[in-house]
Length: 238
Image 1 (cartoon, helix red, strand yellow):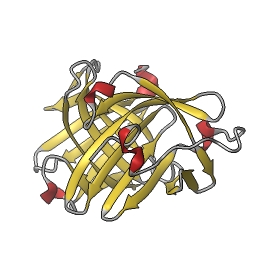
Image 2: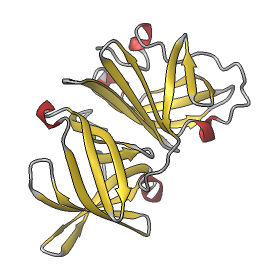
Image 3: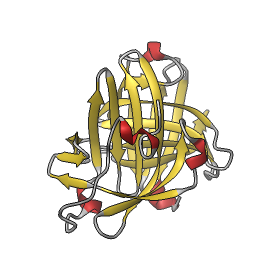
């Protein structure tokens, strides 16, 4: 499986020139998008500044890549990779990419992406980094560096990714759909790089939002207790 944004274009032709450059990409793109080819699915989560793209099948995780993006001139966006499991050499590099987007359709060289959501209704939309853990009621905080664990969420889709931007190491990922209701955050796992038997599982956690931080507590996919603090990347400036 080849990387989406450069080499994989021959199979998933994603990007093309924008026919109406006045489209406000920075406002129109955020949310979740999906496409498929055969039994391979592709999920693209986009927040105001960050993105992640993942390939998977019903019984197999394939690859993921992501990082930062920003609107550029002439209907283009500039992407910068922070992780890329298929082509690690792209990490830290940038590329300008042209898009054509209208309403719920994202078209590129004949390939149609369908919008899943526009960042709602879930209350956790955004890109987050883990910044602390509670143990025995005491909070231990950390400032993210090169080694990062990120959660990126649209209004209905989520993904966590553990990686190192300096060594280009990738440690794992998982994702799927989620809901937020009555103080409960529920994940429905659709792909999991470390153990595909977890696909189909639902995990429920308590959550609270305070001053841009997300407290997340419950039990992990292994059944271990967890009580974590996540902070939006916009606040951290990372």
